[in-house]
Amino acid sequence: MAKKKIQKTNAIRLVEQKKIAYIEHEYSWSDNDLGAGHVSEQVGIEAGRIFKTLVAVGNKTGPVVVVIPSDHELDLKKIAKVSGNKKVEMLHLRDLEATTGYIRGGCSPIGMKKLFPTFVDTSAKNFEQIAISAGKRGLQMEIAPDAIVELTRGRFAELTQD
Image (cartoon, rainbow, N blue to C red; front, side):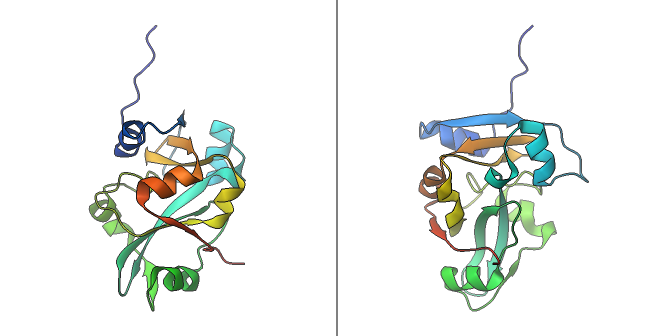
């Protein structure tokens, strides 16, 4: 029986275009279970290696993309400081798709509509590969943290609450 072909997302197309190694993981999801614990159980990756993509808005830069461990909270003061903003607040959920091209639970830092300032938590450097959304719900990709920084022209920074 032929394997069901996974629909390529912008994130996957971009990674393949640049010939960057990644591993794809498909899993079942539901609206009320988009958390890392669920993803971890479904794909067999420890929760500490699953990173979430958040989008904040700075008073000077506009949208700022943040990639942090899924079991941590974003420190808005830290992201404001490293992104050159005085104040940063989370992007309103209703604006996520229009801003990034992705929906909640399927937001990848790679392949957004525009290249926004992107920051990856320094803890990602502790791993050869981390898992991030591959651009749609139910699809994760394991990829080297340096590759994420390269593809997004981002940088590493301390981003989470202590």
